[in-house]
Length: 237
Image: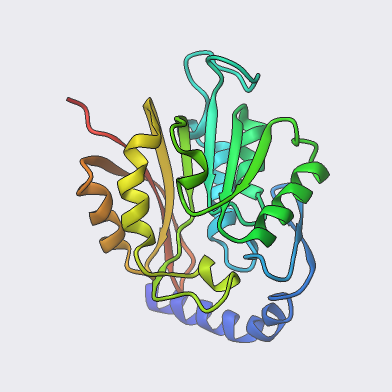
C-alpha cells in the first residue's frame, strides 16, 4: 500500500511540476487556512513547498502552540512572545499573532522581511507582529520567547542566492541549536519542521547535543516525503 501511495504521489508531482514551476520566482497570491498571502519573486512559497503550510496549520490548531499562564498578546511585561525564525512570507508569524502572541519574525533575506510586512498589513496583525532582518538569533539577542518556530533549510550546502537560502545552508541547524537555549523563556518550547528529504537525524542530533529534549508533535505523510514537526524544550532537571 505504501509503495502504491508513493507511486501515486510521484505521478501527481510529475503532472503538477510544470504548473508549480510557473509559480516559483514570480509574484503570486496564495492562501493557507483562510490567510491570504502575497509571495514576492525572491521569497519562499509556503504553499508549493508545504513545510511552512504544515507549520502554520500546527501553530493555528495545536495545544503546543497556545500561550500559557494567562499571558496575552498585549505589549508589555508578561506578554506571550513568539519568534518565527526564517519567516519568509510571514505566514507562521501571522498565525502565531492570531493565536495570541506578540510575534517577532526574522529572516536573512531582505525581500522576505518586506514581503512579511506586507502580509501582516493585509491580514490586520501589524500591531502584534514585527519583522527584522538578520542572521538567526542576531536580531533578537538578549530577548526570550515562550514559543520559537522554525522551518529550516533541509539541505546542506552554500546557498547560491537569497531565495536558495530557504532550502540550503552549511551549518544553520547547528547554529540554531546552539542559540536556542538562550532564546527560550524558562517554560518555552520550539516547534521545528523537518523532512525525510533532508538530513533530519543530523538536525535532531544538533538539538540533543545542546541538552534539549525532542519529541514528535505531529507527522504528515505526503507519499513522496514525510514531514514531522518536533517539539523541543529544555530537559527537566
